[in-house]
Image (cartoon, rainbow, N blue to C red; front, side):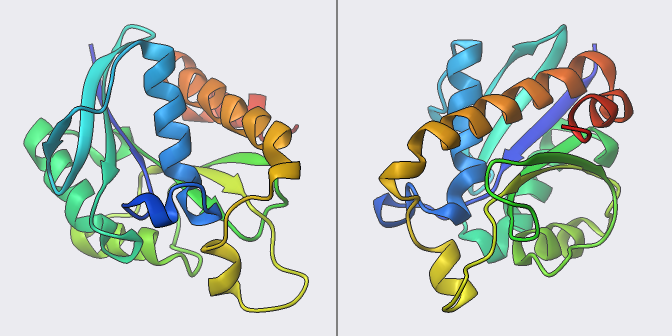
Length: 188
């Protein structure tokens, strides 16, 4: 049985709970519900839980370091559980994808995302899997204000569909591997 680290990126605290930047946290919350476990443990500068999914040992993590310092938490959990970087899956918001779109990416750069930048800096590696959650770009105004603003109530149904799609993608990665999951989800 392999071990995987699934890290959803976001910012801690009620102020950020339902913001676009916290979509990674929202996916992990939804996924632990699917697995029937809870993020009750505090360690690795974050909240985490462990369980089994699709025959694989999974450690689910929500770094509590704020987005730009996510690497500290991911690196600590990865080291503790002795997980190879290709078995690290990071779920994050993606400005360059329209809202509602989920894409899987294997390796690569940070694309300007500070959470990914810090993970790469802290681990010295970029060969982890990303589940990119589309949040779109603002038509006007600052990107910072956009990512730190909550999803509008009118988008709730589409958000729930996107969260479920991301959870399905995580299960597909665990069951069939990232490449097969890319073929399944990236063409939607």
